[in-house]
Length: 359
Image (cartoon, rainbow, N blue to C red; front, top):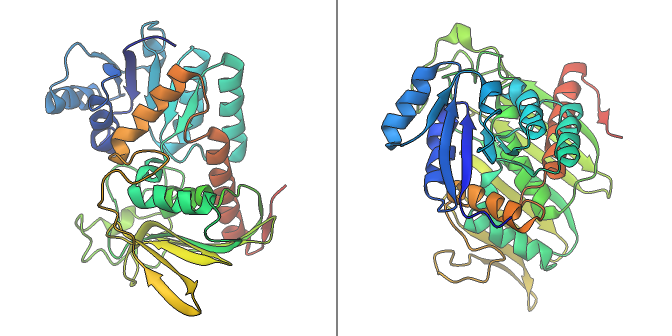
């Protein structure tokens, strides 16, 4: 497409729109926010005031918004159970869609979304913005170049010491789950993407609700204990079809030093892991001696496949570039579907106490 500026609408004017989508779009010279939609119009008006937006239409019914032929792209930032329906409707209306993570609550819903994108010849991507961190890009490059050798074990970390998001529907049960559909998808996406392995064989998992009555020390304040209806911890052992093992550890509140939105990868030639502070450590054996090295991630001009930019800015930039160049988005919906497939299997395994096998 040779269009210079893309008109973008954001459906859902809650925290994630304010924290990520709108700041990212405002930093994108190829995007213009032309519409906001929320069932509570005061939320849209507030965002207009906070960001000083001009010439923005406000809708309370997303279906009316989708009738606007001038809108090119829709960002879906609504509660998780609504992702599939709104995304499919937007694609059917001829819009390109960036859907917030998780892509959906089930693999079947993801397949419906992918089918709608193909049927309407529109682009669809999912908000896994942590891929754009410098350390994530470094790890991906190392894996793609074979520097780790055969990657046979990995850990996906989404562990917070005390960081429960108790606002909105995070803990009420109305958002499709707890930590497993909040932080876990990001960590799992980073791990699968780095390994370039999207063929799960089975999963055995456990979920816990152990910290729901311990709100003291939460960095965002204490929550009403009766509101906490979902799991605060999820642990899973995922076996891939090639025999590789991935261990997922996810928790909003746990007596463990935080390792949030990071991955550890173990190969036959080397191991690599992401640090909370933004660093990377590589370990192995060289000249007969074990070594641990930490690349300097602060040096500009490093030879990344994608230049490191603040994740929330890069997300919309890369999506518009994919639309303009008519190529696959950086986060492909088929990849995001596997994340949802595994999370769905984790919930089933935790519920039944049995190992779940994938097709």
